[in-house]
Image (tube, rainbow, N blue to C red; front, side, top):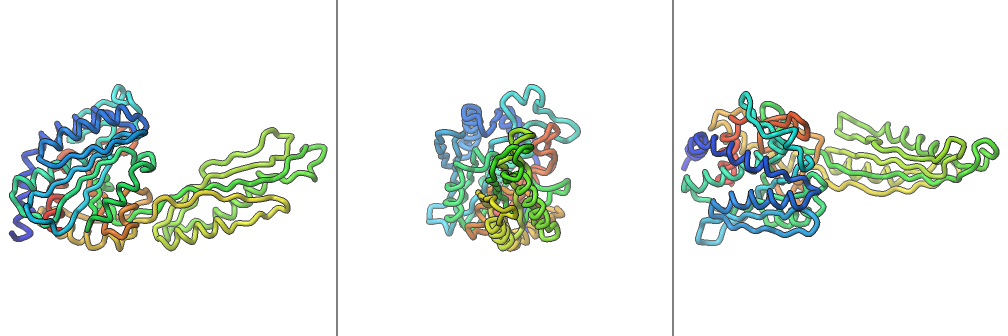
Length: 385
């Protein structure tokens, strides 16, 4: 079937589904799922699994000891061996503590659905569910198996899901990430900064600040010099930022401090800049005689460079035209699990989720009317890949 035909078919199928999409979103949102509350997250996981089991997919609940269970959902309607695999990726955990619904209830107002996790990213999971339904109802033939992977700990650094994500990505030909889009126009995220955290610990020597200042080595003074040096490494045009977000040191005003530390947030748009930044930090040397530096940490998410998204975005833009959607792209400073999949060398397109605003805030919401078209776009991408 010509590209324009199947794309419009998906949109035609999904537009009347908007009330059902909204009902499903409500179910997911009122099931609170903070990443650090396993019991609550598991309840939400069960509710999501129930909805997906209605769509005749293979549902695997991957039990976790310390965090909510992960969900892997596989769909391959063919009888022959699939030509490959496509991965649709997202998370159901949120940043909101259990009980947030009492002061921030799910509600619909002026074409927007509000509530904890609506935008980041339970509406994306709903859109994935209905994209699958459109593929099933249209009877369109897919060449590749589709795996939907919903994890429980993205908001708390993906500690227990990273290996699973990377393994699934390496089996896949492309990854579609249903994290929220950017801005009111729903921009896709074709580049994300790499994210890291490093700690500088300065070891000095304590002494009485009044009686024997010459015998001390002031760790705070040394740390201040290092932070001043590092501040000069920021390069906003290249997308490099270093932020000293936590600084600690000293015990009393009359004691020359023997220890001080700073924790740095590191961001870079290019892998080469990420590597250079790490090297520069590890090469730091003390400027005060007798002081000693200890450097810990590094980048934990490599950048999602645009070259890993360019071809998929071009296809998405072409498909969007068939639905009269004006689709554009952007680079963002925050990381996602898409950073992991791109670092595995797998083409990755991020920001395919909901259109809305206010992630991690009291006014978090999605634009309801955008949901069918975003689901249709995902269905079209899966069909054409």
